[in-house]
Length: 295
Image 1 (cartoon, rainbow, N blue to C red):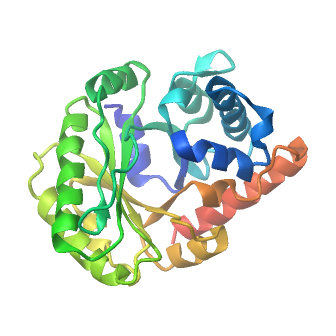
Image 2 (image 1 turned 60 degrees about the vertical axis):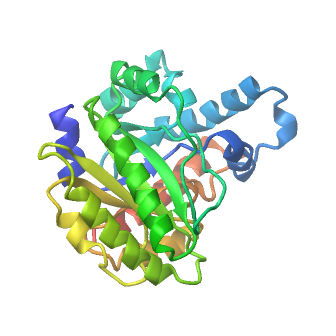
Image 3 (image 1 turned 60 degrees about the horizontal axis):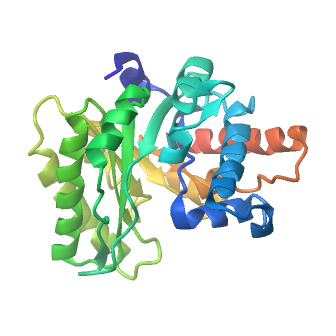
């Protein structure tokens, strides 16, 4: 584990950029960016377009380590290069931004009010490659839709079982049991989730470090005990379908919780913009998300 990167994520001021939409969400991400499906025909061309979009974001002067601590990539981006350097190396060496990798394969069908992660075949191989490519940590997402105690326990247990496997490679896992912001019993789900997370954190070996990526809680500062837990490097928040303005406003009420936004970060960016327009929009977004993250 890179101690310089660990220190940056643990104590740095700023937020984590989530650039990791993949699979089924890729056409949606491209569409939001103004690239219609007629601009690519094969999956390879689609991933080319996505890499061009992410390269444009990463190389922008607005994508600056003064505001951004880390960036989450997906496997295809990790395997590609920017200006002849592997993406993770470019992020850290040229930008001072810590690279993470999304490792999950999407969500299983709903059961007990939650969607667990699908099995992740070849995870050991992927983690080995991530280490070789100088990735610092990983991210994996499950989804909680109802306040079902058994379902929430299952989701958290699955996350921690895989997190321990990831930590065995010297990587820092981001555990993401997202609570659906439209859930009828969101606050109750968060209560159950917090209890399960605390219980699982207490089972970790003394030196194991993890991060948590959680929906912005209904009750302000609801996760402050988790933020203080010695195993937890950082607690970050997802935007979860809120607009950037909504997510920032809610985040600002939670001391010590920082953003890890995806859609809310790229909101307003477009393939049709000139470099100046693109950079100005991204600069405004990073500034606003940063301000909400340092409260």
